[in-house]
Length: 426
Ligand code: SF4
Image (cartoon, rainbow, N blue to C red):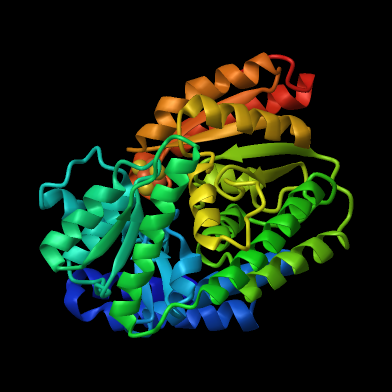
């Protein structure tokens, strides 16, 4: 057992045996990992992904280690607004992922289900509920969520308001992309600034938000360049690197540090050799722990994953002069908003523009939007002669993912792409 595994096992045991006394150990583990990823980075990763990993470990370690420095959010909560109050946004989906790094997801999921939480609920939510209810995770003083795409969020945030007294703002995101909808959401965001101002005692400065929108536009521009370069150069990464990129684009967007990192990715990738293998567009979440997927996509010379919908879920340019309207427009025009047919159309165009060799859609256990829409997406891809594979599994709960099944289906798909360039579908 390596030193890292020994620490993980120690923290896991402590959390299971003394949940209410383990928060300090959990956060100390994150801090230790922050230091490790800085001074002993994973040699199998490109320099840019090493820095990204360290940045994401720092986000969680620094935030959770300091009371009142963060709010809970969901992945679509406008972190740009929270940044104006020196608050980090820790999304509950990401938090569950970090906790699964200690192999605690099964313990928390069972805890939640024993309380009566439905087994069919998404396992990110169950993990989070179990983590808080067991006493391991401490609650912050505020939370923000959106109604966008996920039917689990509102229930989870409501649940904690009721059971733990965590006040929250729900941003109700309309489906329609018209002026009235934009104003409706922009006004809710203005109201959010008032709530956060009351909570923190910090006055809101619109200039600060404008500055972030400016940085955000630059970041997205650079990210698009990086995604295009990923089609040309081999850039060693691991499945988890794409999850980190998704986190950065949602939880650190608008910050100078993240812009600098994306700029570095663009520069660094160009120093790597040409990539001659197959490019696979990945849709939805990534089960970073799955052995077969790691075998094919962690530093493999033959296949390179291109992160898609979760990383670049909005492609437009935000109006810096009207920051609230800009953020509202960004949220409403998010590819996850509205019908799945709309998302399928955008993803198909994305796949065509990037000339990918195939698409893999991961259907995470309990995620209704993913499983409901995957067939629509497959149909759309078929019409454009882009081969697509639907993989069922669980992004976090190892017990719900059957590696043997995933391996068989994945290998058949990759073989098909290798053989005929994907002229048939799987
Ligand atoms: S995987 Fe689906 S159900 Fe789970 S948090 Fe994400 S959107 Fe919600």
